[in-house]
Image 1 (cartoon, rainbow, N blue to C red):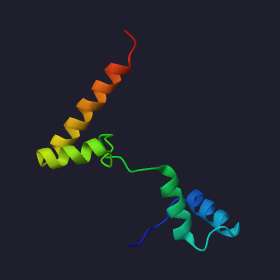
Image 2: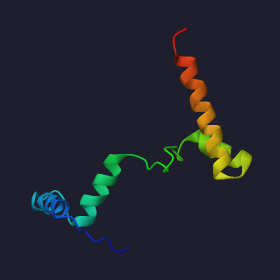
Image 3: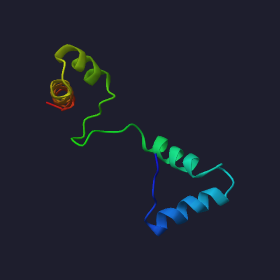
Image 4: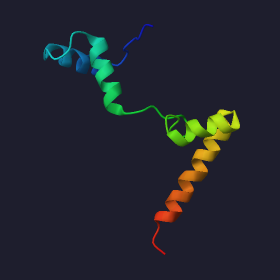
Length: 84
């Protein structure tokens, strides 16, 4: 895979991190940034790494059905946490 940096400010930040001596190469800088950002989320905002999503995927067989189950469970938990 090739990544092209087109924004000068991004390139400057990567170079700044490299000059600090804390990283071996640009890949290490990018890896640390991605890890710090946390788990990836789908475009619809659903965390596909959540246990409920994975269990739903096994039960229903499609990512859409599993996402729906995950959303319903999330809503149920939100309702449960609201004060009466």
